[in-house]
Each structure stands twice: as C-alpha cells, then as structure tokens.
Image (cartoon, rainbow, N blue to C red; front, side, top):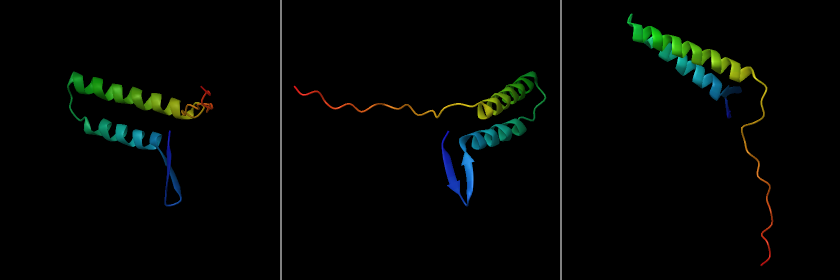
Length: 72
C-alpha cells in the first residue's frame, strides 16, 4: 500500500479504507434483513482488512530486471 506524508503523519490506504468502511457501516441504519446482511458483510471486510494490514508481506511492487537489447 502506498504511504503519503501529511503534516508529519503517515497515512496508508489501509487507514483510508477502514475509515470508508466504518462510515458505510454506520450509514446502514435500516432494520431489514438486507441491511443486517450488509452490515455483517462490512464487518467481515473490516476484519479481513485488519488481518491483511497486520500480515507480514512484501511490497506489492513487481520488479523487472532490465535487459540490454539484443544486438541484431
């Protein structure tokens, strides 16, 4: 995930994503079965996001080796 510097603070896409998911969760205020299912789905997404954030992983940047063009 990319990091941005803003006022001496580091903000990641994980933070932004969790804020948006929490905002969506609290916007679903209905009492229907569909609303309950949507809230549960958002809750699962938040849990998965927390697991992905804490998992040790390599950068999601694919490195390509530069090769010299073949002489024809």
